[in-house]
Each structure stands twice: as structure tokens, then as C-alpha cells.
Length: 423
Image (cartoon, rainbow, N blue to C red; front, side):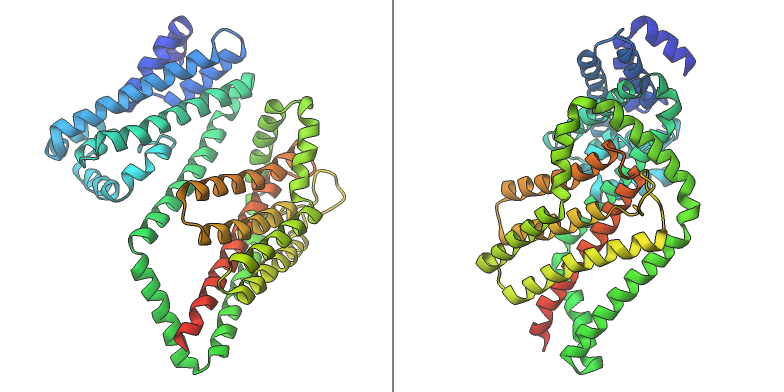
């Protein structure tokens, strides 16, 4: 790494372009560390951010395109024979090939953030005969996102780039893996929707047969959900001490980045952002959701009931969790883990978002609604960390628990929607 940095200091953009090109051909070079260091050099004023991102993206795009056409021209037989020279033996090749045929093209955007995966995605795109158009759209967009992320973070971290690089890389890897899993689950659901639907109906039907009562089935489902929540809370309480050190690292890094990205001029905007999780504003969103249900809903009474359950349940859940974990926030006056504001924002905006998407068939509108939802969830968390009201880990936990409760509420709504058909 030291040799690469010294060479980079002399030739800058050329080294950045060539190094990333070679890494995407599967030459073992520390591309992410180099981009983070490049960000630091930009911080010192010796390089330009725009030119650096362009050079890095071009190098990455050239590298992965070369690997794509190599894979396309040589085919799988060549890699079975010679793949061990680039750390791809036959056993690993077979596993990756099976995985890539199912999910690879859909994960090209986030694959760059996963060590070992980004080095072979180009080859397997070619080997599995992915069309160049589909490959280019996803791979090139991912290249721009990957290079921009690490160079920008290096610029933000400045002199602390080396101190925080490995920690930052770890959290980006975790986030990328979560996104990858979500993409695979969505793909599996869309590809096997009928099988999933029939399985759920069969399970519910068996429950009806066992309990001989529609009402008892509802009670059973409610009990299972309650038990799940209680035990999830207890487990989280037990592992809290174990995660304490991890929290400190995460809090330190996240707080450092936000403080350096958003200066004092953002104060007014952040106060506006914080209002998106204000209880009065959230009640207004609940009212809008109720109006939407009355206009568009197909099971109006059921949807209104679960709207109430999801909202009041989120209030109760956030209060219960904070009292269980007993974690005092930065102000030293109240429990803040997990963030109640973020739990409420995720659930309140999420329930409305789900209903809008459920009754709308236009893809561009749904994409816009989802993007708006994610922004509305992000804003209160950002403002909370900016004003140092809660720790970043409080905010992250709020998102996590909020999504768990929201998903359970939606699942229960859809289960109860199906149950009358089985009577």
C-alpha cells in the first residue's frame, strides 16, 4: 500500500484510473483504500474532486467492461481450467456461477462494495450471457456510486482517513449485504409469488382446520406476533452490553461525518427536518392516511383498524424498549435507545406509503413515493444527530425496530385480509 501511495503522490489521476481498472480485472489492489486516500489529498487541496471521481469511475468502468468481454469470449470452460490463477477454483466458480445466474445482474450496483464479489461480477456477467445493455446500466451506475462514495468520504474524513477507513469499510459492507439480501428476497417473491401465496393460504387453511374457528385463528396469530416482539426485545436487551463497544465506534464515526458535512449554516434546515417526526405532524399524516383509506381502500374498516394498531403499537413499543434498555442519551436527561422519533416516522410514513403503492399500478409513481418515504425517514434522524440530541446508534436502532414493527403490521393486515376467504 505504501508503494502505491508514493506512486499516487507523483502521478495522481493516472494511478487512480489504472489501479481501479486493474482491480476490476481481478488484480489484488487496495482500490477502496486508495480512493479514500485520494479523498484526503483532495481535502489538502492538491487534487480536484470532480476530476478524481471521473478518473476513478472511468478506470472502474474500463476494468469491469474488459472482464465482461473476457468472460463472454472465453466462456465458463476456460475459467474452470485456469481460474485458480485469479483465486477462482472450480468449487468457488460453481457456487458463484449458480448464485450469479439467479441474482447477479440485479446486484451489480451494490456488488462493488462487497470484497471478492466486485472482482468477478464482470466475468460472470459475460459467462452467463447477460446482455451488454443490462450489464452496462447496472455496472456503470454502480461504478459511479462506488467511486464517488469512497472518494467523498475520504475528503470528509480528511486527516482521519486512515483511522476510520477500515471501520467505514465494514459498515458499508454490512449495508451492502443488507441491500443485496433485500434485492434477492424481492426477486424470489416476484418470481415465486403464486407459490408463496398458495403456501400462506395452505398454512392458514390448516390453522382453520385445527382450531375450527375463524376467531381462534386471529387470536393465535396475534399471540405469535406478541411473543415474537417480547422475545426480540429481551434478546436485544441481553446483547446490549456486547454491542456497546460497537456502538461507540459507530457513534464516533457517524457523528464525525455528519458534523463535517453539515456545518452551522444547516441549522435552520435541520430544525425544519426535525419537524417531520413531530407528533402533531405525524398525527396529520395519520389523518391523511385515514382519508386515503376512505377514498381508495377495499377493506376500509380493516385498514383503519390496522392503521390505529400500527400507530399506537409503535408508541407503546418505543416507550417499552427505551425503558428496557435504560440508555441515557447525550443530553443526560432521558432514555434515547432506540429513537422514538425514528420508530414513529418509519411506521407512520411507511403505512401510508404501503397503501399508496398497493393501490397504484404506475411504476414511476411508486418509485417516487418510495424515494420520498426514505427521505422523510432520513430527515429526522439526520437532524437528531446534528443537534446531538441522540446517539447515531439510537437513530439506527429506531429505524431497525420501526421497520420490524411496520412489516409485522403490514403482514398482519394482509393475513387478516385473506382469512375471510378461507372460512
